[in-house]
Length: 412
Figure 1 (cartoon, rainbow, N blue to C red):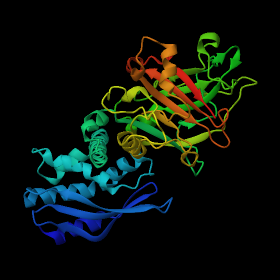
Figure 2 (cartoon, rainbow, N blue to C red):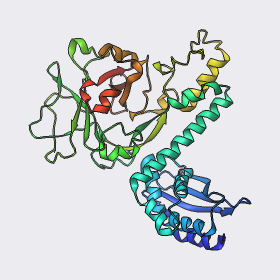
Figure 3 (cartoon, one colour):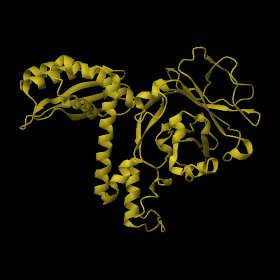
Figure 4 (cartoon, one colour):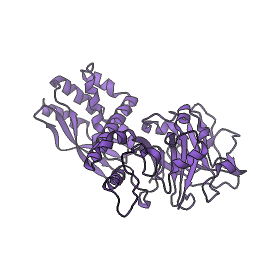
C-alpha cells in the first residue's frame, strides 16, 4: 500500500467535527501490520466537557487488494462527518469511544463494492449506519460479557447472560439548559385542542415526560417503540405510598400523539396540577443487564443466587455480584438521576416486576418490559427522592397498546 497517499487522504479529511465532538489523527497515524492489515490511531475530543480518548482503530483487514483498500479508505474518509454524527447522536456525545468507528468495516464484506463511489453509496444511508453501529456495539458487549464471565469463572452461564442483554435509551438532562426538540422531562405537553387532561380520583395528573419518538428512534436498536409520534407519561404524585390501581385506578397514564398530528399546541394543566420543571434531555444508547432483584435469573437454576449468609457469601454468588456491578451498577446517589427508556429498571427497593403481576397476573414477570424510568432530581422530587417505573407487557408494546401500562413507585 502507498502509506503516503493514504496518509494524505486522512489528513485532508481530519479533523472531523460534529456538534461538540472532534475527531483527529493521533501519533503514529497509519500503521501497516506485517499481515497487510491497516489501522489508524485516532483521538476523540469532547469540546464541551474537555474529555478525550485515544484508540487504535482497525481500518482495513488483511487480504484486501491494494486498489480496493485505497478505494475503501478514500470513501471512509469522505464519509467521516456522517459516521461521526451517527456515533455522537447514538451516544449523546457522552461516550468517548473511537472504536465505534470500526463498524464500517462490514462494507468490505460486500463483494459488489470495489470503487470509491460504490463504497460511498454504502455509507450514504443513515439507517444502514445505525444498523452497523448497533451490530458493532452488540458484538462488543457480547465479547465484554463473555470475557468478564471467564475472568470470574462464570463461563458456563455466558450464553444465558448474553441473551439477557437489552439496549435502553438513557435520557440525560442537558447541562446547557437549551430547549431542543419536543423531548423533555416535566414541563407541559403538546396536545390537540380541547384534549382532556388525564385525571385520577378527580385530581389532575402530572406530566413526567414527553418523548418525541423520532428524536429517540436512532437509539432504539430493537425497534420496540414506534418510529415517530409523541409518547406522553402522566402520573399521580399526590400519594406517598405505592399506587393502589385496583382501588383508585391507574397511577400512571401513557398517551400517544400520532406523527401526522399537525394541530398540537402547548397545553397548560388545569388549576391545582403539580407541575415538574422542564428539563431538555439528550438521548443515548444505554445497554444493560437485569439487576439482581429481578425475575430474569431464576432460570439459571445451577447458579446459587440465594446469598443466604450476606456476611459470608459463596464464591459463586460473590463472583456474580461482581459481574453485575460491571453491567448494572447499584443505584448510587452519586450516579443519579437515571432516566431511561426501555432496557431494565434500577430498583430502589424490591423487585418492581413483582408488582406488575398484581396488575395482570396472566402475564409472566419476565414478559413485562420497562417502558420508562423517571428519577428524582434536586428540583424535581418524586416523593422522598424516589423513582417512577412504567412497565408494559411486551406483546402490548409490539401492538402499540399503551393502555396496558403499569406504574411502580419506589422511594426512600
